[in-house]
Image 1 (spheres, rainbow, N blue to C red):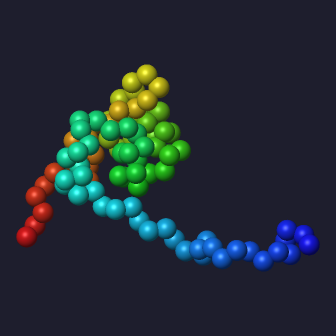
Image 2 (tube, one colour; image 1 turned 45 degrees about the vertical axis):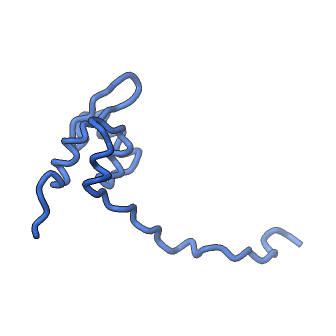
Image 3 (cartoon, rainbow, N blue to C red; image 1 turned 90 degrees about the vertical axis):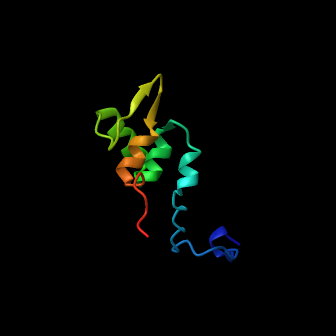
Length: 91
């Protein structure tokens, strides 16, 4: 019997979309510190890995990306401001 003739084991439907990542709460943001890495900032902004590095390399990432050695550091405050999370929620 060829591999193609064997029945596939029951798996999750591959066409189903993955659940969106959890939202960033004020409490979770407070635990981040002063800077975050590029990929954390990219996930928060909904930017993919390749695009994030391309934007950082060309200086067009939506917030300042500071090159430190082989890594990028992103100021958390600027991401919070960009997302509008620095304002108090309306009651």
